[in-house]
Image (tube, rainbow, N blue to C red; front, side, top):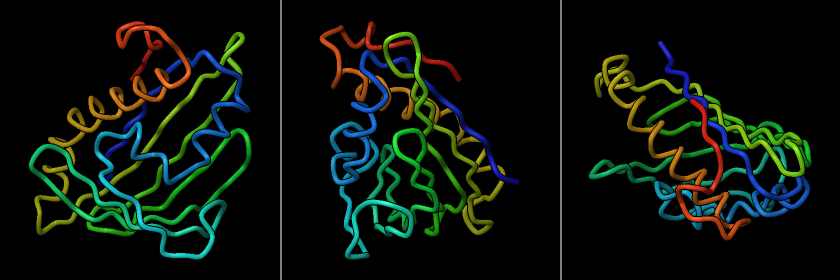
Length: 156
């Protein structure tokens, strides 16, 4: 059983500006607290087919997440496949929202049976949801002078 996580935020910038920043994959460590480092495994660093290794940490738990971009549709969608210890698929979707952007992040993740499988996934869901909401607030702050609490509106 895979767990589904979806979070979103309103960002005070046009879709094209948000895409331009988020498309710089190496900068994801600037706004994703759980991404410690990114190493590209392919010569290309943008677009479908780009592969990377991401040192990931959530609290004391650490893993190396191998990802491949499976969709790259500027300026509205990028999608990945997780091929590491945790497997699954995820996507960022950017849509016009007033004068800004609605940024959605969705993931479908499966945890290995030798590490608790579905039980681990169910326990991880609220933790990952909280981490990714904070990540989106950090992303929104890049485009706004608002305080962290005012950095956008999140949904789950």
